[in-house]
Image 1 (cartoon, helix red, strand yellow):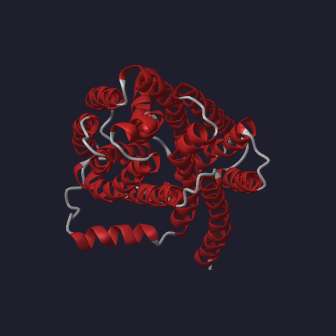
Image 2 (image 1 turned 120 degrees about the horizontal axis):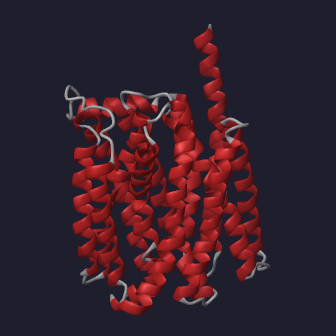
Image 3 (image 1 turned 45 degrees about the vertical axis):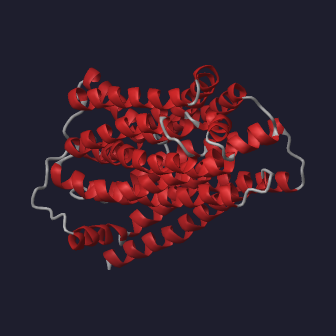
Length: 402
């Protein structure tokens, strides 16, 4: 693959993988305005994040088999079209419950890009390059929390929150054009694959039984749920508790996201000397310590605005290491059914993410503790899953050599 072709391929894959993040991050600064216009509370509007995660989780289970049977691009194009029209529909939502429902449908469209981008990385690039490519995708993915909420804050303040969804529709249109004209086809369609429920379920079960898959898929998913808990809780914590403005919130979100970008690019350098297994173990341990510090600081009321931002910055920086390495390690055992594996991995990630965002909303008590506690629980849970799962992987390897 030549330099120019490689650039457009990775850039398009990055946009596809970041569609979900843009769909979440850009409208966060508008939560107070949305709640006011739709005559509800910020906590109620937070459920539109939960419905989005549920939609992505369910949708990935649908798109995985479709991508394996019909190839990567046809289902992807359909998903992008669905996303484009539902983005416009969000701007016309008459009630909070309507917005929550439309966001579910919007997620069904956006998840096509998330599943296809991971599967295409496995299709197009050698296995040994996968972690590095995922780190490059992380660069595009991490730009969304910098650009999206900052842009969303200014757009919401100047033109109203509805304009945010028009911008998302425009991004979908650009991504659709790049997909049609710049993205390689990837693996050829496997028309012999059945789309009947039983073979599809068997395919998912086959993937789920691989110790390397379920260990790193669940460890990465639970770690990522700490990020989703922050996304769900941060509008209330910063704008309601610390009373920052929409624009200031956007800049805080951008600063935190810089940690993700920096870490994801450091990860590519570390991979020259260390394995993905070594990096992810150290990463999740550091995330545990930071999560515990965040909970203790919140509990004893010793954290102010800047110390809270700093601990969250450290906590989320670890995602720059966890995401690319857990994704690469999860998909490494698969070739033919990489689409199914990618879909299941994404469904696990967003399903657990939906639970974490719902918990933050349900446990809302007027303090930062629900957000901090869920973030900490995700970090500790992820590290425990990794330790236990790696023992299972080691046992399987011992059996295979006997």
